Image (cartoon, rainbow, N blue to C red; front, side):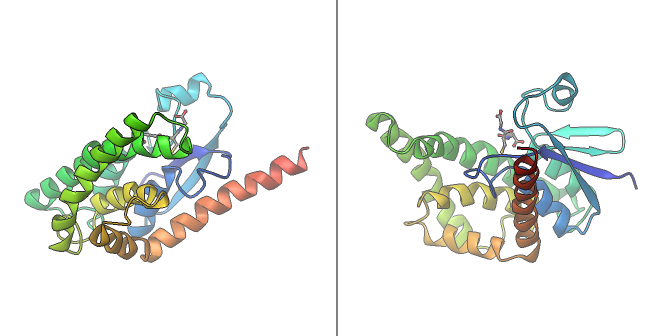
Length: 219
Ligand SMILES: N[C@@H](CCC(=O)N[C@@H](CS)C(=O)NCC(=O)O)C(=O)O
């Protein structure tokens, strides 16, 4: 099997630590017990080589031998193909996982991202716009409650769909957005209680903390 290399930033400021999307990939790799190495690129500037892996100048990306994959959803689907701990092998099970991967990213994260950007802006946004974003997100979370009430995980057993949905919910929860959504909050608590998440989280925090020490030493 080829070496798996996950690339993320060499350093980020405090605020996004624990939420940089390489955590999704780390989490999946830990769930599947797949060996991997973490590589870093500069947070400050991207060069042509970086852009050849991630055309938007973002992280993460994953290389698997000669294959380079960007977009956390695409990376997790690739890893799903490597381990049944992440995605079942039967076509019906796979189809369910894939639809929930897209639902997490294209239905829930699509609503949570503009909402969270306003939250990061700390109330400095336009109130009418903020209300529209609140309603947009609320519409998605309201529909998610009965879905999650009926099942432990989104698509049968735990899968990459749960990693993505839980990570999307983490950011919503960070700003109090799950306060009135107890079923989603309980689902999130179940997900982040998994040892693989805890390891992925601790490793991301340690990765950026190590960079702090290096920056401090170099003045
Ligand atoms: N849709 C992309 C989003 C990646 C993304 O937003 N990455 C952030 C870190 S979590 C980033 O690189 N931000 C820096 C930038 O956008 O310039 C994915 O899921 O992989």
